[in-house]
Image (cartoon, rainbow, N blue to C red; front, side, top):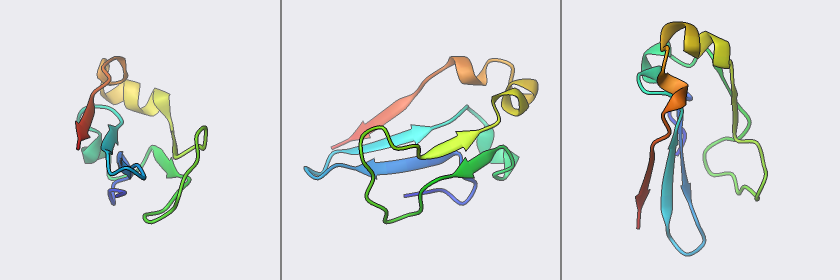
Length: 76
């Protein structure tokens, strides 16, 4: 799963474990501006592969503490 706003990516392992990687806290409001996706929905990815790049300074300017918090949701 890749959100249209590019701020979150969902992954599913071969065994069915799901992981949501979410960058920042209110980054959905940026409408994708600081993000550059390197994968698309349905892609098979490998360990070490870059999924998304983002402009850290852009996010920090708007969300001072957003990148200091890391939140992962695992659904199995």
